[in-house]
Length: 156
Image (cartoon, rainbow, N blue to C red; front, side, top):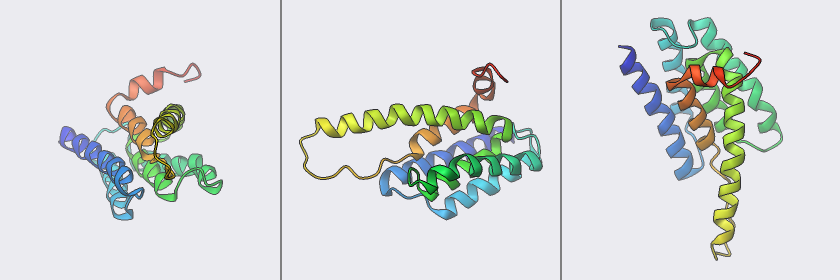
């Protein structure tokens, strides 16, 4: 049953990334399903969050880590909620590490985004970058290979 739950988790993260790329929005319904799935899976199965308390701690940490970026207008509220809901699966010990990975991936992605649009000869503005891409990539990495995310940091 865990592989099915893992597949559902990955499918929900992928859906969030794709909808953000398409419409620059992440639906609250999708975020709610991702959150409920993470909480349920942590209660029923052996996820990196370990239990519901760990899942809720991961959600709270995910919100706390990205909330300042939302306040400054760097991220949209949907991005913050999306990451926090995905953090229900991975728990607090992986959430802050995954946020660092997402920030690093976001920097690389932003550089590519700007370069790609500068090379195009279109006079129209480029619009907001779908930040769910680096957030989702980091969440997928933490979901599939939590040991890799844990081992990257010396102070773990």
